[in-house]
Amino acid sequence: MLSIVVPCFNEEQRLPRTIEQIERYLDARSTPYELILVDDGSADGTRMIMDAAAERHSAVRVEGLPHNRGKGRALAVGVEAAKGDEVLITDADLSTPIEELEKLQAALRDGAGVAIGSRALRASRVEISQPVYRVLMGKAFNLIVQAVLLPGIWDTQCGFKLFRADVAHSVFAGLVTDGFGFDPEVLYRARKQGVKIAEVPVVWRNSAPTKVSPVRSSLDMLKHVIRLRLRG
Image: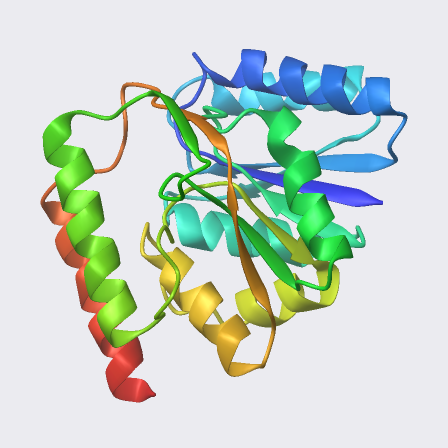
């Protein structure tokens, strides 16, 4: 079985379409799956949309945090609940279309324990780009991550990642980073365990608005990268 974990914070506008796209794609493939929607303490109608989806479709499960903790913590809760042989984590805006899943699954079949969608490879296709300042900040952050933590990985922050189940449960258990900086931490944990990480070119479309603050979130992510490096 495949587990799909989607963290959500105030996503009442985008979530219905995302749920519908995932269900339509996976139902057509006749793939046994569970869709785990994690409410990260939303203050809008996100939870009502989740509960309605769970009532409508037997594959949908809902997990919730009592208050907002951050994307990393929401994913850790969702991964802990996952029962599938493979665990896909994807953003509520589906910036990477669910149809790209097959590329990541092929990488796992070839021996990777983690397959990560990437916007930075030659074969990647960014159809709707971020504002220039965010592109530049993202490139700078990834250069720092490469220099101090994960050499050879060009895009740690794309929100579309597929894990072998044992790897997912291992790297998300004891996660320290609650916020947007969780990606380098789980990939660093995987690499330290000797897990092969495959970076896979994918289609990506920027979806506005974003909850990532250009300055505050970037500084927080950088802080966690440096902390990981110092802890070894």
